[in-house]
Image (cartoon, rainbow, N blue to C red):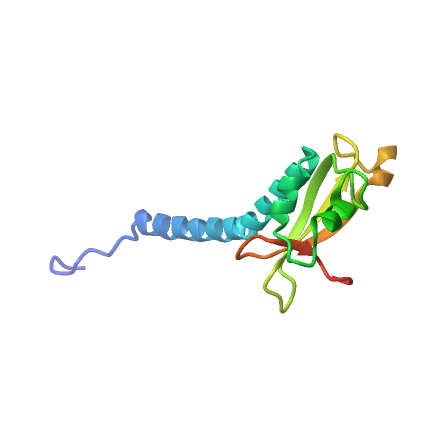
Length: 149
């Protein structure tokens, strides 16, 4: 080594730290995407079931955003206090996913006529029902999933 030779380059720790932070930031973004990707549809489902738990079937029917063929009486026959699914006193969103070749989000919900939501070991858990609802991402309208979905 002579006086005219440049000194050897030192690897700066700040570059290593920058790449590490960038990698951790990318990982955090990926995790947040998978945690919150169906958040709006889950919120629409929560609003619907909160209205049912409160006994406000008018608000629940409005949140359902029914088509002309699904009348208020049909809704009450399904979700009313004496309906097929009623009464709803507690619920739990199980999962949300996008079915293949579909433009809706399928949200699976377990609900019970008891408060609080019964655990698996609770004798009241026999009355807990599960339903898969389809939520349209555009207008957040709710409908039943077709059989077999």
